[in-house]
Image 1: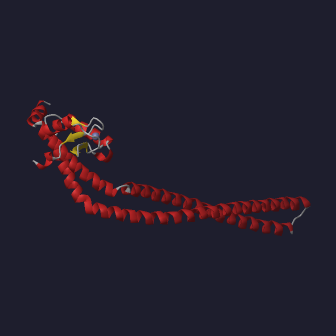
Image 2 (image 1 turned 180 degrees about the vertical axis):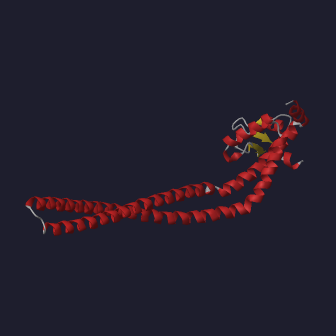
Image 3 (image 1 turned 90 degrees about the vertical axis):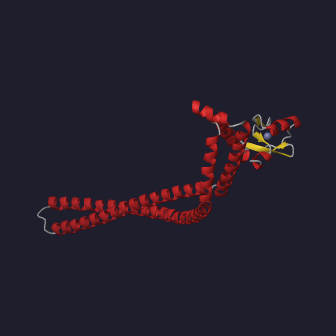
Length: 252
Ligand SMILES: [Zn+2]
């Protein structure tokens, strides 16, 4: 901590103001690049999430549908078995020795007939469900195609912007970090806080035509003189932004 204090005292107020203003100019350039990219990164993320969700949904529907189709096949096999049994029982009925045997076979036939009915009922139910699921799946697939198309175009749009600006942004970020190391912690925190709250991310503004460059309120002449003297860090009494005179950056 002592060392930082020593480094701080090496900077005069004027140098601090200059460093702050330089930082602001660099950060504003970074803001400009990010504004250009705008909502695109978020939109791409949203579309990626949606595509993933739709793909999962379609996979699940496919699994459910094929399970049901398998069940239909199984029910058809059961029907064939029952039909064979009925045929067998009917043949046996021709060779019975008494009524009791005949009735017993009749009961078996009745039971298998009911089994077949039950299977047919299940098959009808499954078929309706399969048709419904296939309909839902077709709709989901159409939406998926649309979203994938959107995602591709948004992605390439973002890639174009990123490719054009990435190098520039990296250089600016390095510059910003370099300026930040020159500014004392307390002042830097204040700068960042003002920047977050301020419209357009402006924490340090110059005096323009006797007014604050951030909120455009008039600055009294005496205060303007104080700003020009660069002996104190002065903030706008209306918006709280740090005020500098325009010349400070040019004189370096
Ligand atoms: Zn202001």
